[in-house]
Length: 283
Image 1 (cartoon, rainbow, N blue to C red):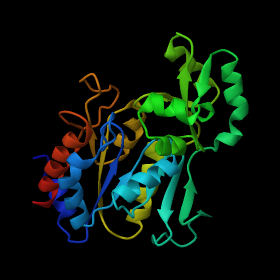
Image 2: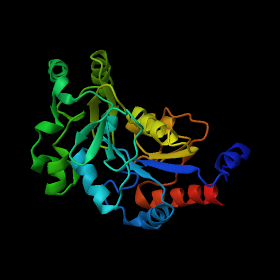
Image 3: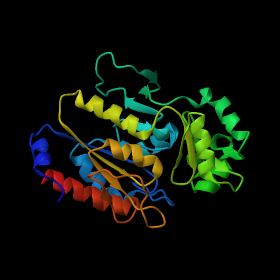
Image 4: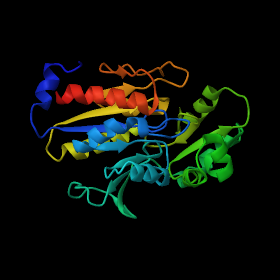
């Protein structure tokens, strides 16, 4: 049980709002099969309690829409390592809140569009040999990721975050150091290095939490992730959960005082830890 006196007081009102932010690959989804079915018990419980479940991923909007449909979600979601937030049109945003209408969403930009960054990416390629994800064919992406052809097609539509495939054997730290000199964030995701600018998962999570708090209710936030690009998100929440890395350990650099390290990874571990946390909070 991790609830102390302060947390009990925080949640004692019936209007308190629990919000769950979750990464996808290796967290809610199996990172090989992309299956979420072992988490159905927790997902059904979350739905029954009307707890917002906010997907936070390096995936594109097209990819995220697929999983939102599969999971029957109607909550906001965060794409491409915090590049943008998409609120459903019916979501009650504050008056004078800045957004753009994009299809059926209200889009809030956090990061810098890739179209603005093409010169900086070209400058980085003068020193390092790599291919941008948006340059790969659908067949190449499917082979690298195990995605279906349709899902791989959605992965090509990059707007804010550029995964890269290295073509030389060089120190990734050297590449990332140079990338940061060009104002990029350069972080390791589940499979690829990611280049992006201006936003991250933590900034986008903070923005959503601010919106929910402006509705007038106390908020307790839970976040789940497994990779280096999840660290800003996990710092931004009240109760961060770190899933095990593929090799069985945990990523470093997250010394949050309320950090919970889950045993295992993927939807089965996600199911267990979410049910445990919600059981503690709602008991």
